Length: 358
Length: 126
Image 1: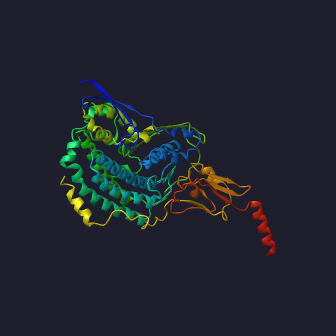
Image 2: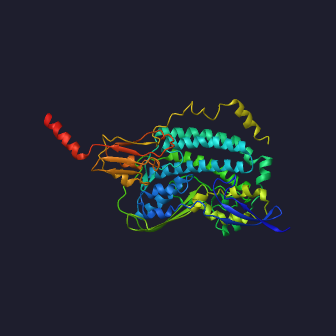
Image 3: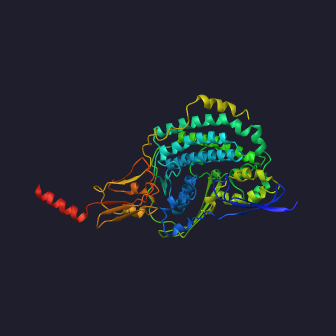
């Protein structure tokens, strides 16, 4: 059978964002996949030259809407380290709460899109219905639905009142109950397993070799999670990375499903141990030197490199997002798979293209 | 396939998840960051909001006492409200309604010079 080349994307019904894959197929089986990126580049890193280091918080939040909290937190932590600022304990706990709320809504969004990718639209609607509760929580506590914009350098702009903490606890109990009801549909259903088990398998060794991060790596059996570094309040909370062994699409979805429960548990712990006190410290001076910040996003590890000459504007902000690290492993997953499995496998790494291209 | 059936049956008897939107509107959360409003009677046109705005959507001229904002460039982050010393700026909990035409907010206040003169004449009157 002669080889043929089929374009997948940049516009495709299952892809919310543009990524182009040139698929070389033999009959229905993929032999080679070549990715092409660069359709939504916005030049956000370049903005560091004309926006001061405080304003950059709002810029980096817009690298990715879904994980805006983690971007701002990672950037703020990096600058705080450069300026040797001690963040108040309450601010560290509050950052954890909002970051975990973000992880829940991001994972629920992905689980819905994943269900949609294998053609299970009613499950997609059910999962997004649950997600709406988290969006409401974010709007009620932070003021904005998606880009919560609570971080500043040295702490936070908003506090959680006891009423709001109770509201979070109540909503999370409902979310947990509804998720438990849907768990068997996504993880035990025969048809769903037919579409996800054994698809896009990547071994632990291969995943590590290709620099894979986040749930994609943990789905292959490697317990690597940046939260283990103990930034924000993670050091004080009981936390164990979620790991699955098989490295296929099913395991990657199972890791994310279990991580939603884990995030609910982490928020409960953080609310229970929340210390009283200030939520921000006064920032004086300007950052100088270079630093690296690492934070676990819903999709994996995000890395910030910041260099500053001591001026109002930063010399360089370099952002390495998790999808950028996961594209090589995606290309390695595709050969040998059927063309009809491509949407499921592509979505299984939770691609965030506008994140990748910044 | 049968795993989803209990959820489907429950949905038949449970309350609907959506609202009949234009008829039923959810009240906004207090503290939600919506449309930006400025009270020019209180504003002293210091221009801190314009300097701190990450999207540079605000333009202030102290001399002529004008405050302008491009609502389409505003990202509703609320930084300007946080830094406002006089408390003139606030965010309405409701979002701006969608618009088909480009809008520009232009607010004219009283220049500081005129305001001082007025105050002096008021003092003299008393």
